[in-house]
Length: 276
Image (cartoon, rainbow, N blue to C red; front, side, top):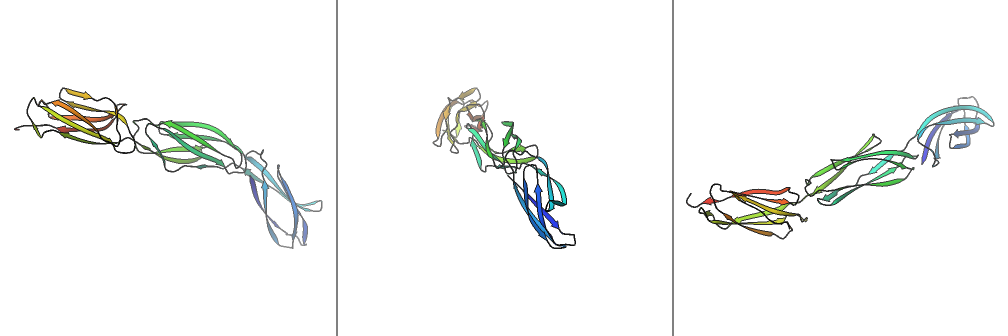
């Protein structure tokens, strides 16, 4: 790393001055010649390279004006060397349910000195992590935060919060792409008599590129059935149910569920009695 200093020197004496200016720190010295007319002022800029072993903290900069071996003027100014941590937040992060999500965060120390950093990252209830890292000046590292995305996690946009040394805060947006299905149903007739059998058909297909595993559930009065587990793809899966008609109730309830039991789709359809 480097430290930059600007020093203003003015000749307030009555004679032309020719001598040296010397800058001193605990880790670096610089000295060069200087000439000033009476009443003139010069602004000098210095760049010190910071040795790799220097730690963050407060230091003294000593500025001396010399005429030969004689000290003409001296000033001591304190300065601070601090790390400066930046974060490269990835954009457009998206994860599918049922997968392992990995959020990579690149952290770099662009400050002039090495230092430790306390890194805290939290995202909803699935990431809550604190760790301490050490980075040299100019060094960078990638921290990977991973979590299992449950099959029944809601599809929406989320925001994780990254905090460095309880000072700097960064938002880390990402989205979860969930399962969705398209469902079409039909009955074989419009009207039924008591005691007849209604043929109820359900067609199910995935509404996106994901292929959830689940089952179909149907209930009408005492009739209740749950299919075996199938994988719903972009090709429709057809299910047919022979339902005994009893008009103690005229509503068929049905739903599409994931293996975990979470409902993907719930609806109902009515059966109407002949002559009513």
